[in-house]
Amino acid sequence: MEQELQFIQNQLWFVIALFALLIATNIVCYFVRKSEKGSDPKFGEMWDKDQLDMLIKKSSECLVEYPNHSGALFFGAKALIARKENIAEARRRLTKLLDIEPSLKDSVQEILDELESSESS
Image (cartoon, rainbow, N blue to C red; front, side, top):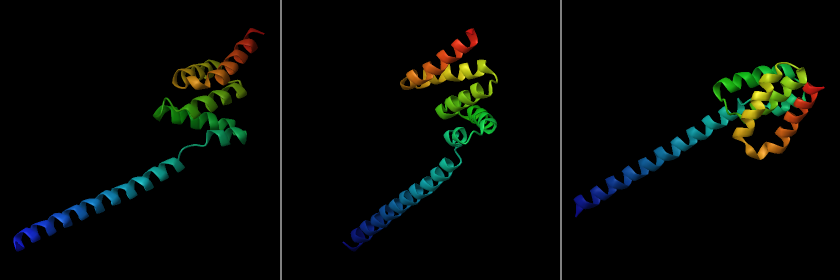
């Protein structure tokens, strides 16, 4: 009987250690994700502050690592259009954004239509 109680006690300690490990892992993951989010460039803020050169640079860097980043595609394309630089690249980014985020069709299509009308005139 005493051996059975000792076995149960050992099992309970094992379960407690397992839960402690699970909790520690979740805490570490939480802080790692939190620090990664802080390093995410704020493309909207750069656009609002009219930091177009930095926005073009940061969005291009972001797209190398994350080619489907919707913020980098959208605001990078808007910055390229505003600077009147590499309009073909801006169009490519907007088209890719349409493929990734069909819900943005209205706003992105409006920008693409403005590009076509400005090029034809």
